[in-house]
Image (cartoon, rainbow, N blue to C red; front, side, top):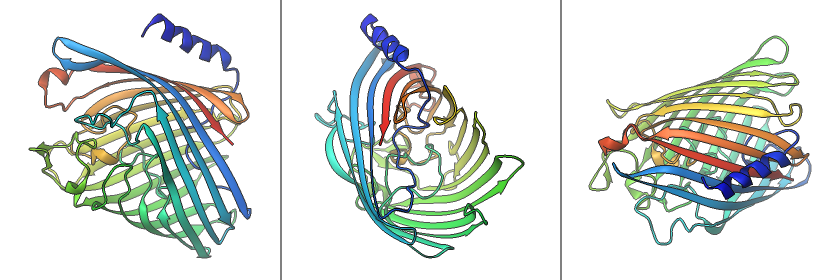
Length: 368
């Protein structure tokens, strides 16, 4: 990182004096008004250092990104429709000229429809939605990038307590063409069950068990994140993942959340496991600082790389750490410093397997 980059980092940090937004822009549940409008924005500067080229050659990358996510929703508790856009502008052009591997789940110079959905809840225990919508199951980013939207339909059966909190639910989801890039023939099926148990005070324990499978994956556009096993560019294995997530939450002025996620691809005998562990302390409303740490180790065929998080440079076959420190600037904005250290442990190049790549991101997040 150059001296100018370090000065920019210091200036952004000194400018931040209060609490942090809990995550990068992601749509939240809205109150049941007739018309609701929301816009999230992300301004990011990132540096990636020591990228492996050859055993004696390494390279660095840096880029800036601006993202806007406007959303309009009409309706109430029982019925609603919504539409949202996704506008990206980055200092790099990640698909022009076309690289051998598209590492991102977004086009760096693009304006597109991000959401277009209808939801229906005719009974308190039945929830339906269709179109292009936010993933309704609480998966971690090890399996599903939060920036991607299922395009299809989902049915959820649920039981709520007297306070209106969902305690038990079961969801079935079918989708096709859910990626930003071309995957029009790829089918996704997800079946999931969730149970939440309240504890003493403001604590709760949640368990989520899911089965996620993809069909016709050879229909993925050439180049989209293919860290999985391939021969002559074609996928070798199927991807039928079982995923188990446990979440402990504690409220109060300094809320705490601890997440453990374990998955395995039942269609593969080797290199088929994934582990994601995370802990977050603090919240934007009550804490001066929010800190989140993530450790993950994902075998190369544990998940389908195209749909997992793009924040970790690789989506499968890697091991690494992430630390996110944030503080609020205003009621609607926050600044974050995100550091990552990771290695491509299942790289086909043996010399790369023990090589650590460093990433640093400075982010301004705004939500209105």
